[in-house]
Image (cartoon, rainbow, N blue to C red; front, side, top):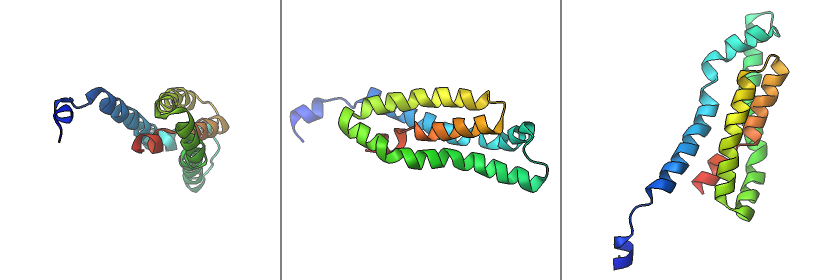
Length: 129
């Protein structure tokens, strides 16, 4: 190890920033899980417990479907414009889509918010690169 490498301090700010973005990304997946059944029940789309589970599954899968569809385009954006804009846009999209999801009054609006939350969130692959 050269003297210049040894004297360089560890880049705490960038590492903590990326860790915070990844934490926010993971929260957007896990936070809604405990109350999804109650939220779907208030939408009134299910008449039985089996239907309720079906609609909760659809709502859960919407986020990951959006994420799967958005992964490659976000990777291309990160290659073209850099990782920082992708992480900033992804973090902002988490805030917006979680507010939209939390305030949705219909099942369709909740599905759209969750799908957009996954589609507009390119943090995971970008931060790991």
